[in-house]
Length: 180
Image (cartoon, rainbow, N blue to C red; front, side, top):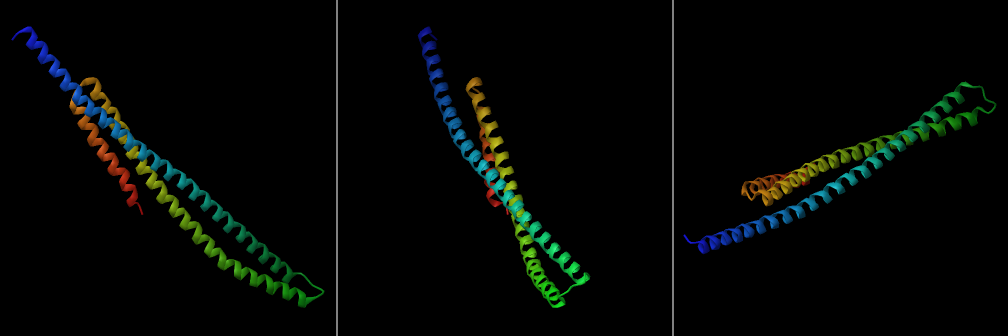
């Protein structure tokens, strides 16, 4: 083999290596796009979880306030019934009005509690979705790093491992849509 043939062969090998590295670069770019999508979905899930948690806390506060009002009216009615009064009819009327209001508010208490529990269930679901997005995001990030190592080492096994990890990350992130 002559020197010119060796040089030509060497140039063909470099061109082939550069072409395969172009594919690796495109794979890395695709992984970066997937990573951005999963990251945004994860951030949105976390934000929605925080909003649902705030709504649940507000609902529990409303429940607690209504419950305190019920207890205050019950205490007032008890005091009115125990204490002597100049106008017994007015006291009985006030006790009856309090009792009607307590009955109404107690029915609303059950509704408030149910709404708060539904919101807490929604928070739990959102947090489970966000956790899946986070895990998928981490796996895709590792895939980007592995694929980048291929550019340094020129060994295709890293990009293959990166594609496997990225696929697993995408599947995990997609499973967030199945969370009930």
